[in-house]
Length: 306
Image 1 (cartoon, rainbow, N blue to C red):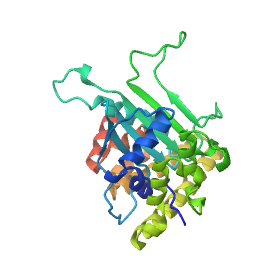
Image 2 (image 1 turned 60 degrees about the horizontal axis):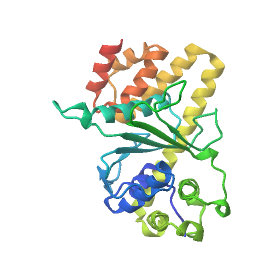
Image 3 (image 1 turned 90 degrees about the vertical axis):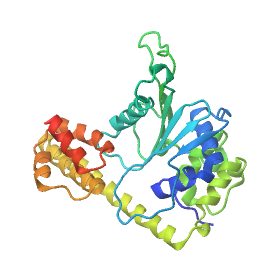
């Protein structure tokens, strides 16, 4: 057997975001958010996966969203590329989802908790060796939680996870191992098959069950991700070597390419405005562009933030 990597967007959505993946997603979320407790009885996947194909690769991140049986919303994001201001974008997506729950005229008491589960293929927090971390709002001195846990961020950093197959004990460890090592497996290990939903996820990820067109799509996205990783790494290294202004120019070029990938060709007059932005403004644009759908959104943002 050969298995595809769950870290590509096409595979991630196919495994966790399809209407047939409900039990897989419940097990995954129970393990990573609730430490293996069976807390989720049911959920509804928002905008479930649709097996379509791209003519060009536009986005470098993805979301799978689900509404849990208690009304909570979970945003699940698999992030391969360590792009500029990614950490700010996690907060932006979390608070935006929380704020957009209500329709006009509804009371704020109707808001339900929002949880952002973010799996990264790079290290985010140098301050700790823990691969699974959880953040909520707490009082600084007494460390008590602010009201209810309405806003929660859970992070899984795959590079920090080093357990071998024989060392896996908890459901969270087995799911993280699946996320990191699935392409290196030659069969479904007994240790992982003890959790039926992981066995189901591996069955979905089995290349033998996929069409040639699916596999071509996956290969295209894997090549794209590797190219982008190299580009980002080179930009950061050059920025560190050449100083603030050179770093600004590198970020400006990187964000311009991301915008063109997301929105299509950018008019030259808009590109000229972007070239004049400060480093701080470019960082703000890097966060805001997650919400852009057309070049008009970009133009409006530039008008408001120059």
